[in-house]
Length: 321
Image 1: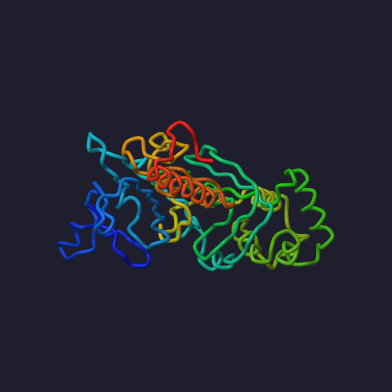
Image 2: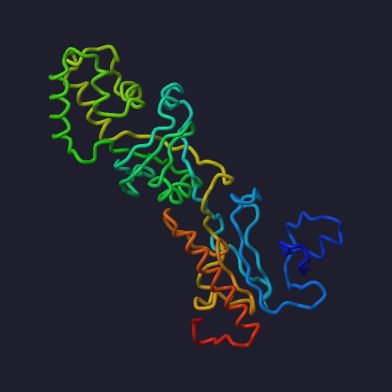
């Protein structure tokens, strides 16, 4: 049982927990709601912000559990182990010396290609912006695919991200570009020449992976070293060992399956008078405002539907206009 208090924010308190002198409600089941002393509430829209917004326990520790239909099972989370889209994926400790990793923190790369491999098989390809932080990589392209990456990591699968830093050039054209630059600037140090090919923050990383001395003159770079540079520029690989905590996530996944919702009202198909919206639903989209729009739209529809049902003006066959 839940009782709505009369504070300005109109929150919901669990009567059982209040009577027991605790507000740490974790296992209680909502069977009905009481609006102060006015009796039961027949039509209830329910929305739930993600744990990343509230500092609450992770979704895995607090699955959606709304019961009330005859079988007393109710809605369960749409996935047994709901994922969370995270801001960043971070690199495996020890893969690269710490000074090299820190040297790229704060760097944002635009117009790069990204490929994701899971257990050696390519699972996704994309193009756009990738950023480096003191933890690893982030940015819009990473966010778009991080649900898949998190799922793979939780299944103990090996995840590798490959960055193509020169997607507009194939390997032959890139090799010609390297030969030209090395010839035209043959008396300069290779670390200076590389600043014309990659951002300054990436020069040390490039030389580290390609095993080339930064003080070496460009004219002394041999064919094998040039090949290593070319391959690194087209296939800079990062082993992904984990993801940032749920508290830093911006979108969560998992929840009530859409099949258990009446789409033109957002009413539960299992619990009459219960209207669900926002992150309670097992839907999520790419970054760029799609998730906010889904929350706004489903919330508007759930609220309007509940109000119309309470007023007796809601039709089961027609959507709201």
